[in-house]
Image 1 (cartoon, helix red, strand yellow):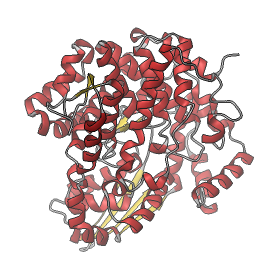
Image 2 (tube, helix red, strand yellow; image 1 turned 30 degrees about the horizontal axis):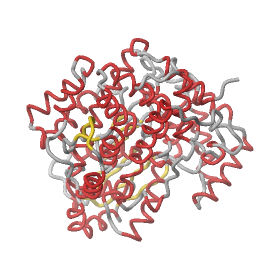
Image 3 (cartoon, rainbow, N blue to C red; image 1 turned 180 degrees about the horizontal axis):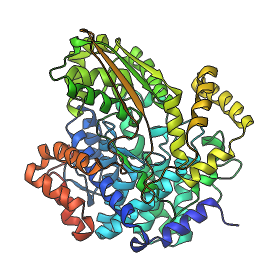
Length: 525
C-alpha cells in the first residue's frame, strides 16, 4: 500500500497545466500578483533591512531575481529573500488551510526563472504547491501550531513546486517531499509574535524545500512513511491527525479557496477591519476622539491570536509584528490613522503614536461570539475533506483535545458556556453544504463591529467573508487597488499597471521579461 507521501508525489508528477481548471489557474495568477505586491510593500520597511543586508553578505549570483532589489541570485537564495519580504507585514494570502503563498509563489518563481521555464510551468507549480501544502496544514489542524505558525507547510510546498519544475517523476518527487519533511520547522511564539525574526518563518523552510528537490534529483532519498510513522511527522505536529485532508487531489482545488489580505495583519482580523472602514465611510471626518467605545465580536481564532499577541505587547511594547496579531491594536491603528497600510506599521510611526494608540485600544473590546465561530466550522462543510474530518471527531477526542490545548497554550479551547452556544449555533445552521462555482467555497471568518460615538450615535456592521476572497465579486477590483498602491512607488504608475496586466496573463509572456518588469533594479539592500 502506498504511503501518503508517495501518493502526493505521484499526483504532483502527473499534474499538467491542461488538467488544471480555468478557475484554479486564475486563482494562482491572483496569488502571484498579490504576493509581488506584498514584497514591494515590505521592501520600504525598516524590518527587512537586516535580511537584505544578510543576503547581500552571503548569497551567490545566479539566475533568479530578488524582486525588491533586482539582484540575480541562486534559486534558494532568491526565494528566501522574496519570502522574507512577503512575510514582513502580514500582507499575504491564505488558502484552505495555511499561508502557502510564500513558498508556493516564490519557490515556483525562483526555480522557474533559474531553469528557464514558461509562464504555464510557473502556474502549474504554484497550483501543485498550494494543493500539497494546504492539505498538509489541514491534516494538522488539531495540533500545537496554527495559522502562519504552520511554517512546516513551506517545506512541502516548496519541494512540490520545485519537483514539478524539475520534471521529477513520482518516486523522486516523493523523496523530495520526504527529505524536506525529515527535519521539520516548529515555530515558537516568542520568536514569532514580536521580533523581526518572524520574517524567517516562511523563508527558511522554503529554502529547504527547494534544496530537497535538487537533492532528490541527484539521488538523495527520504523515508516514504515520514508522515504516518509512529515516530514521524504527525506524531509531533498533530494532537489528532486528519489524513483524510490529503484526499481529493484533482477533484477539489485548494488553490480556489484563496483569500488575499486587503489590510496588513492577521487573516482572522480582515473582516473586522473592513467593517470598521465601512462604518467610518458613513461618518466622514471621524476622529479617534469621537469614539466612545468599540466592540468587536469575532471568532475564537481571532480572540486567541489577540490573546497571545497582547501578552507580548504588554511585555515588549508595540512592534509591526505584534500589532498585526492584536485585533484591538490593529483596530486602534486604523481608527487613529484613518487607514491601515504598511506605512502605519513603520516602527517610527508606532513609537510616535504609541501612547495614543494604547489609550484608544483600551476603549476597544474584543469578544468571542460562538455563533460566528460556528460559521467558520460550517464553511468546512462546503469541502468534502472538511465534512469527513468533522465527522471523524468523536466526543472523547474533544475531551482529549481540550486537555492537550490546555497543556500547550495554557488556556481553555473554549469555555463551557461558549461550547453550549457553539453547539446550539451549529445545530441551527442548514445542513446543506455551501454552494459555489468550482471549489471556490466561501470560507468565512466573520466579525461584527459596533462603534458608539461620544455624541451617542451608534453603528453596527457584520462581515462574514473577507473581501479578498477569490469567491468575492469584489476580489478583482481589490487586487488591482492593492497591487497598484504597493508597487507604484517602486515601479512607477504606468509600469505597475503594465506589470499587473502581465501578471494576470502570465502564460502569455516570456517569464524572464515579466519578472524584470515586476522587479526594481539595483543591488539587494
